[in-house]
Length: 274
Ligand SMILES: Nc1nc2c(ncn2[C@@H]2O[C@H](COP(=O)(O)OP(=O)(O)OP(=O)(O)O)[C@@H](O)[C@H]2O)c(=O)[nH]1
Ligand SMILES: [Mg+2]
Ligand SMILES: [Zn+2]
Image (cartoon, rainbow, N blue to C red):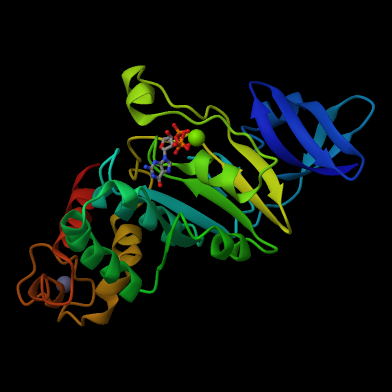
């Protein structure tokens, strides 16, 4: 029987199929071969033994969060509580670029900012739009719903940014647990604990536990450089310019003059922290 993994709780795999939902175990062989089934995986399972026999080939996959077969990632980015973090946003954009997943920057908590506070952030967001990234606000429910049609979209981003709240708003039958940020941080834990895939209309959405840090150490400096899509526009004299110590580097020349300074600074942080 074919199905799709929609949730994993320790070694229980929740599988959705045309015959309904089943809870299966994974074959021991997977562990031996160091293969971990992920939410989003299409699998063949034995409906009597309740065992996953085979994982069908993946279109793409991520390790954090553990998901596969994703079309788009909603990078849920809060402007306040928690404060806007260009560092985290750039990291998640790098992860999407390297893994060939289309990112959408989804902004939350604009309502908590004064006009003045928003003005400076608006310019930063404009820069990302100019790079070609979609930027959408979490109050545009109808527009967001339309974006999901025939797609699997993973929600990722900082803990307390509002991922689960937004998913609940997309379908009134859903009731993912959400929590006040102060409470959540006070207890020092994340509200969402399991990666969970749900169908919304003709699309699928994956809610994931938030985080406060992203690890880029699995990627090479060259991969990270290419993920800063705007750098490619500038033709440095050295073909393999790392845009760091090289004299005559065109990228460095355009900081604050075409390239957002925080983007360049984050690039340097990302390639040095390993
Ligand atoms: N003012 C305001 N509050 C919001 C907005 N979006 C979400 N919240 C609140 O932010 C808090 C955290 O929201 P959650 O949906 O639990 O956040 P999360 O991203 O799922 O968090 P984790 O599951 O820990 O990763 C809740 O109290 C929400 O009501 C928004 O646009 N404006
Ligand atoms: Mg959540
Ligand atoms: Zn350069």
